[in-house]
Amino acid sequence: MFEEGQLYAPVTEDDKGVTVHLTDDHPGAHDAVYRRRREEIAGPALRWTPGAPVPTVEYTEEENEIWRRVSEELAPKHERLAIRGFLEGKEDLGLPTDRVPQLDEVSARLTELSDFRLHPAAGLVPLDVFYGSLADGVFHSTQYLRHGSQPLYTPEPDIIHEIVGHGNLLANPRIAEVKRRAGEAARRCETAEGLQFVADVFWFTIEFGVMYEDGELRCYGAGLLSSYGEIEEFRDATILPLDFHAMGTVEYDISHYQPTLFACDGMNELTERVGEFFAEFDDETPARLAAARA
Image (cartoon, rainbow, N blue to C red; front, side, top):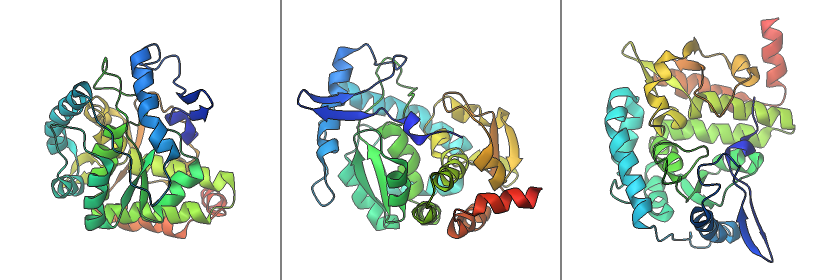
């Protein structure tokens, strides 16, 4: 199990301005220019309120080049290793490959495709807000990019992870509906333990899910689809069939490639079985799953 907050750098604002709290081992931790840029992007997102225009970021040539390089590197990997549902969503969403897109332009297209929209996130979004918002068709997306010294790696979700990974998934209405049901499950939770269980199952499905299609193992998890390195390694993991109790209780490290993954047997198992799990989840579900295994 893990805490979602570990994934994102906390952002605070006081009379001295906005501060993005990067860990010491972050590639940009000791780069003053990068830190200032992160704070420059985080400020408007931190102060943004629903209904207001989404902050526009004037991306630099270096930032656009990071987007271009990652898009170029991932494209053939997606064709070879991603599920059809992701590839169909990617084609329909039509993200630019030569520049970083603005959240509002991606959001407008997603609204047409699956009735989802994007809200800007400065960094850390509380667990209940992040997952609960999915029930309303809202996905919280960061706007910053990874450090330029490591364009093919990021220790935290950046706009490449959010848009290339999650955005393309949300462009597929069937997958978007599973995410919406996960949000509804989160909204029903009255305990922190229940909410964490939802987050952990989400991790092993929407973030790091794999699927058999025509006898071949492919990936649909946003964490794999946006990772230049891990997308090439997931077939070396221990692959298990769907097991919601295991997903919600296994210990795992978010800072390393996942050694154990859970596979759906085709798209129907994702949309029906995983979707049904989220649709029926409540705070008593973990106990019922544990009892069933006893």
